[in-house]
Amino acid sequence: MRQLAWLGMDIIGVLVFCAVGRGSHHEGLSITGVATTAWPFLTGTVIGWLASRGWRRPTAVVPTGVVVWLSTVVVGMLLRKASSAGVAASFVVVAASVTAVLLLGWRAVVGLTLRHRADI
Image (cartoon, rainbow, N blue to C red; front, side, top):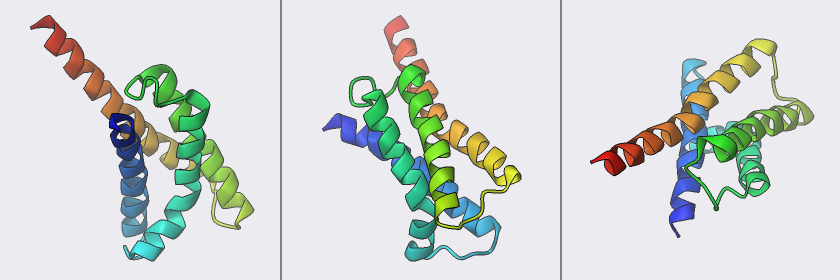
């Protein structure tokens, strides 16, 4: 059950990325609009979870976080390209950077928190 909550953190990260991106381009924040933008990346996130067996070590930056992040970006971009959505180089760089912060960042915070608790 806890693993689903950690997967939920990744899903929230991807949704935040997509919502902020749509907002910054004045594309609207409707549920349908965010879902249209998010589905390729969410597909990549789920594939990354399966490939890394994310349920085993969901909070690990390496390997789980890195595999989930790379899968989110690579699969997301491939699916966007296949569906005729934009994949400009600048977008790929921004998407990779922002999703790295969101998908790896929460794992780093959890890891630091757990280490700090162990030291007390």
